[in-house]
Length: 245
Figure 1 (spheres, rainbow, N blue to C red):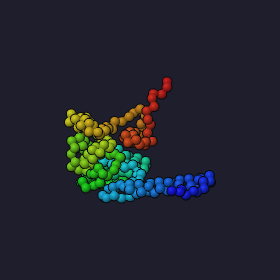
Figure 2 (spheres, helix red, strand yellow):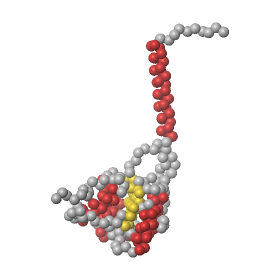
Figure 3 (cartoon, rainbow, N blue to C red):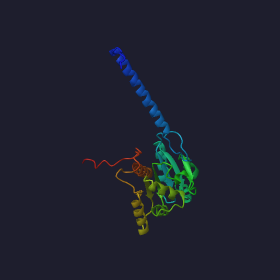
Figure 4 (tube, helix red, strand yellow):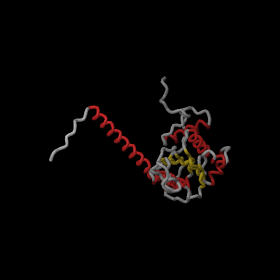
């Protein structure tokens, strides 16, 4: 069978054909990337698929309980707001009482420092589910009652349930345990919470920076708390070794 003869292609024609093939390949790759991006979804707090997954602000739960140390909770909220971190606040009933006694804040003005506030009795809150993505939680101050609930996995209120969720999701949980002296029960609960993955952080003052005021002590403590979330408060002196004599 005779073969049809065609003249050989010139170099210019071959170059043009290669460029067209490359353009088609790039267009196909671009379309595939668009389809892949459209298929990527995230789940909002309320449920079903929503827009494509996008970077979000860091999100930390701040819980305050009835132990003394309300200024530490307020300072934590202020520092996180200054750093642009999204905060979700939960306060217990006795935290509200202690807040009024130890600070010039009211429960309402404290809630205004957070991006969202949740009732401690609301176990239907997004914070009660692991599908609500957070970067961690700090209980500041943390009463021995709250510590016991976390250590034993009791979820009777939102503070305890949110902490339990953070632990099971392998996220950072910091318990600023405020009590002294400590009984064996307290120590056992601290050990149990630590074994479960929490960081027990007694707010022990540091004097190497020569604090001039209570606020200096508060700032240092809050700065060290935020270090545990890889956040730099930037407003306290870090230990740099003894000065040369």
